[in-house]
Length: 142
Length: 76
Image (cartoon, rainbow over all chains, first blue to last red; front, side):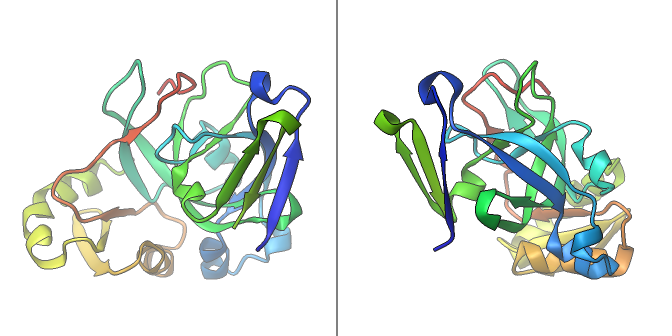
């Protein structure tokens, strides 16, 4: 089972964050005849968020990837309800080349954050997340 | 973007729920292009037909459930 383990000096304070690479989805690249090595890619900091139904990318990232929306969805946060947002089909690559080749993610603003992506339960449903608090580490396997 | 497709989806939803509940619908402008068992099949058909133009894919359910976020990171 492909996996990666990430260690952070103060996991409780910072949270389970990890650098991921976003690209257009493999489906998109195949349909457009794009060589994966020539595809646009963006390296971003992502937080694993078990409190998020779905995965979110920061506004502007889809533009950088050169992709158009494939749908819309409504989102609720503690301070906003039923906000309509665009959705995009992307590939998410974690360390060790662990990843999802095609996942529909939601675009929204990430408020004053050092992170540009929230990894939600739509990704986690495919894998195993182990949070080892005393070791300041977490492991994600698919 | 996708306003026309969203209206088309809402207009066709009652019929789609009767015929294709749980499937994924592909819509472009005012046209329901087709329904598919898996989201990847709908996306693939969208890319093949419309290349890199925007299109609309959504699961056919009677009431759309919003995505929920327990934290305050998001600010749409």
